[in-house]
Amino acid sequence: MIKVLEERKNQIYTKGKDTFDFACDKHSVAGSVSQRACVFCGSRVVLYPIADALHIVHGPVGCAAYTWDIRGSLSSGPELHRLSFSTDLRENDIVFGGEKKLYSILNELIDKYKPKGVFVYATCIIGIIGDDIDAVCRKLEKEKNIPVLSVHSEGFKGTKKDGYRAACDALLKLIGTGSTDNISRFSINILGEFNLAGEAWMIKEYYRKIGIEVVSVMTGDGRIEDIKKAHGASLNVVQCSGSMTGLAKSMKEKYGIPYIRVSYFGIEDMSKALYDVADHFSDNPEILKKAKDLVTNELSSLLPVLQKYRKTLSGKKAAIYVGGAFKAFSLIRALKIVGIDVCVAGSQTGTKDDYALLKDMCDEGTVILDDSNPLELSKYVLEKNIDLFIGGVKERPLAYKLGIGFCDHNHERKISLAGYEGMLNFIREVHASIMSPVWKFAPRNSASRGNTSSDAIQTSKCAGADCSPEACSSCGKF
Image 1 (tube, helix red, strand yellow):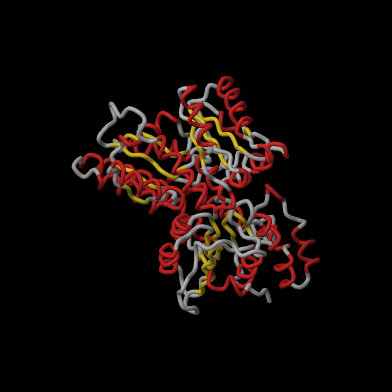
Image 2 (cartoon, helix red, strand yellow):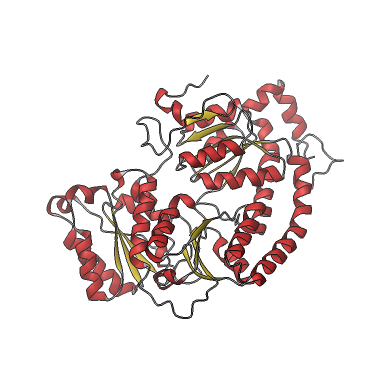
């Protein structure tokens, strides 16, 4: 029996068993090996994909090394964001201050790389020694005539969500400083799409086909000039609600731009994202017509393929643990299409309203977790006899050690999972992971079979890639 820490019990809920009095937005419990990252990390994952900006970490070199290429975001042009710069503060800098060093390094880097803008990230040590990075940024901005923006992301100030807010504050300084000439009335900004595997390009193409101009994407394949004129768009479309809803609210207050929340993952959510935008521009019925035609064409080819996968995946059980709760909603809906039940669901940064909605979506007996840890995840994966774990890089070794399939749905993946094409990619990966014959050799499975040696001998006759139902029925492929 794996026990749960007493301090963690109000962040775990079992539907149909517990009273829903869910706690979240809490600082992590010391000793629980929390999945959350620090404030600095939260700001980096939001701003990092802006490809033509210089990103410099003011602090010890370890902070820059830890977050280098953390998003893996693709760029259609410049790749300055791929380089990781640090002021590499040492003992003398801590004692005497690092402002002069920051100024000198920035001066040199701006002259060498000619960036369109600069983001300067404050780390924990800067909050302690009190370097005035705002003053350094203002001085360089005046001298170099480019935006030089401070990001107050001292790691000890809170959780990853506070890092999101720090990043949005920096973006808000940039928005409104560019020209809005020649922007269509039927235009949007996409907020919270990070182009991990080219998704932003695919989504922009969908909107282009229905007659919508995308002014900026924040921040996947992002450009400083596009962000500067983002206040000229007619609507903000928020994909990652945890990281970008704050910015959308600020833009509504400052510029009067309304916003909607969407998801681009899964058939239902992708289609709704197109229809919701079309409904906003209801005075142009041609947009809605094009959206309906696009969805119809995509589904006519996709649904028959998904039905084939449903025959083997129906009845399987999944656990989901992701960064934002909105992503969990989409995953549950997508898995239901192929008959997979979600028995464990959790996130790092969900709100109480998010978890209330998650509760309504899940079946009786589903365990819902906030800011979980590996021990808790192991406990519920084993108790629910899960077939598939969907999470990020930290959950991958956990799933493999427990002997279950794993699907990466976080920063490190290289396969596009958004849109209609992404849905097919996702289900293919899910099918390959769950149906792999290797899991029958996992300790928890082999023990239940009893005589593992005879099974191993029988499976060794498998013809591998040439295997067929006639040649072998023991490998689990058929």
